Amino acid sequence: MSYTLSAEDFRAVAGKSADERHDYLLDTIVREENVWILSSDKGMVMMSSDGEQCLPVWPHPDFAADWATGEWADCSPDSVDLQSWLERWLPGMEADGVTLAVFPATDEETVVVDPREMLDLLQERQKA
Image 1: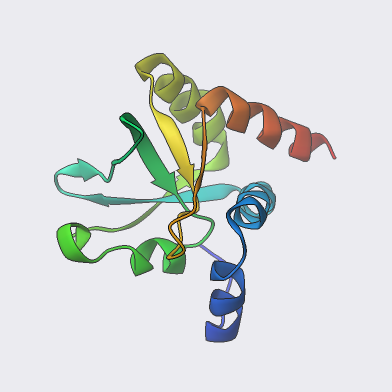
Image 2 (image 1 turned 180 degrees about the vertical axis):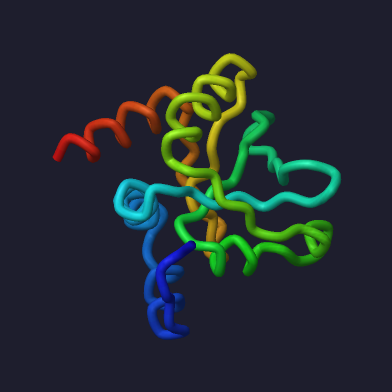
């Protein structure tokens, strides 16, 4: 389940800078105990950044669904619970050399991090 996001909140958050969206994503993952990806019956949506395979992740299904257009029109938001994200997904992506596109939005600027960095940042926020 996800928190309620009004259209006004959606626009305000989506309009933040890439660094602000990065912080928002981390805080929201810890608070809501999940992260959102896009997937279809063909698998997870992946994107490329400077030749690297990236998994785009979002803090709310509405932000993910907003990206389900064009070649991703058959995709829908899927939730990954925080425990699985920390214990299986991030270590697996690190082993596979996959990076994370953190909360991409329409401004084309997106923070890209490696899974180890996200794991460390999430664990720090959990302790705070």
